[in-house]
Length: 187
Image (cartoon, rainbow, N blue to C red):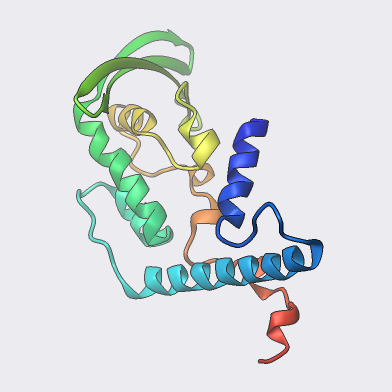
């Protein structure tokens, strides 16, 4: 993450709570308010994930697994990647023992413009591990459609556990929501 990205992330986190002339005491108070709001939003999202079910769009066991484990918000992101598999053109570029390299052609759309982008996916048959040049899994923690397309052509039906991240699971209680703070005193 670059310095600019970190700065933008912090600006988004405090947006609407602090401004350029906020003093230290107000900052601490607003930080507590910000954290409280974040925890309330996460608890509401967790409740929503347990009480509202988003239907699967395919019969894919991979999609079903994400459906069962992930929060609704992350599952929607995964579904977008799954729908993107339909247009994928993938070609085996080279095979080096148990490691195959695929070139996956993807259409990137921005308003009325369409650009063809080719991504490279390294796939290891032994442990069903894959790494894509788009870096979506490393940056956002969800599998990209390029890796999912390679999994599909290699008939990987059961997703390796390394691709199911605990931070997106709806059945895990977030530890920071259990931290007591000054706003908990009245409860």
